[in-house]
Image (cartoon, rainbow, N blue to C red; front, side, top):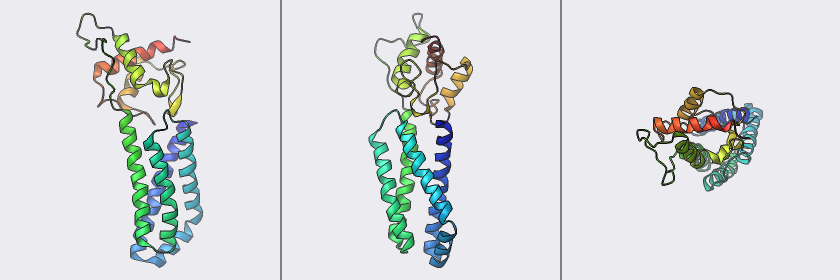
Length: 215
C-alpha cells in the first residue's frame, strides 16, 4: 500500500507543479486565457490538489521521524494554497509568484530530506571497520552500521516497517539483491552508493541476511 501511495504522491506533486507553472505563465501572458484554463481544469485541479495533500499526510503518518524539515514542508504547502487561490483568481502576480516559489521550495526540501537520509553516520568506536584486517568481523561491522543507519525505518529486528521499509524478517531476497537495493535505493529508500564504501554495503547486507532468522 505504501509503495502505491508513494508513487501516487510523486505523480500528484509533478502534476501540481505543472498546473501551477502553466497558470503562472498564463497570468503574465494573458489573464483571459488563464481564467479559461482554470475553468477547464477546475475538477482535475481539485483532484490533483486533494491527492497531493492526502497522500502527503498519509506518508507523513508513516514516517520514521516527524522532523522539523517535515513540519516546515507542510507549513509551506498550507501557506501556498491560499496565496495561489487569491493570486490566480484576482490576478495578483506577486501572490501567484510567491505561491509557486513556495511549492517548488517544498519539492526542493523533499529532495534535500531524501539526501539527508543517505548521509553516513559514524559507527561506534571499537568496531573494526577494515576488511583487510585479520580480526575484521563483517557481521559485527554490518550490525553497528545497520543500527545507526537503517534501524530508524526497519527497526532493530528488521520488521518495524516505517517510511515504507519492507520486512527484513520475511524477505526472500538474495544477498546480491540486498546489495543492489542498498547501493541504488528503491522507492522512498535513498541510494547509499555515495555514502557507503563497497565493503560497508557488503557488511550491512550480510547482517541483513541474518535478520530473517531472528524472530
